[in-house]
Picture (cartoon, rainbow, N blue to C red):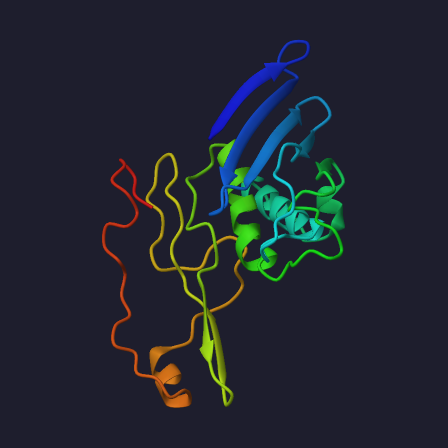
Length: 208
């Protein structure tokens, strides 16, 4: 869900809003205020749901990483990846939410799941593109003798004038999937099928 409005004198301040939900219904809510005069932005996540009992709470650094990623994607010039990128940006993440949980909260899923959903919300506020799969599609299995962990590329959301890419990692992921031949050679498994699920990107004018 996304929207926009203009505030202040003239059109100096523009407010964009967006929200999305986790699988349990927990809400990520963003109010984004852009100041055209100052060249600054405020990403305000007030209204985001409280921390959860599950393990997809995310430390504030995860939200900061998602914000800086989105900003670098949208700015039409090369920007060095450093703290200076955030100088004109204020990020508000209320304590006690699942984007700024307590020290005792479980956070293992915050980096691989919640980070993707925060990215989707930021890009939705800008109406830059449709959501991706909203997580890193984690797969893990094993026993007492081995362990296997993988993130499976799902695809990218479509944009105002283009189709999304299929079968790729996107946004906050930084891994490459294991080749099927390597998987079967190194692990006691047989891969029966590895393919793109046709039609899963929706039926819009431009497909994800």
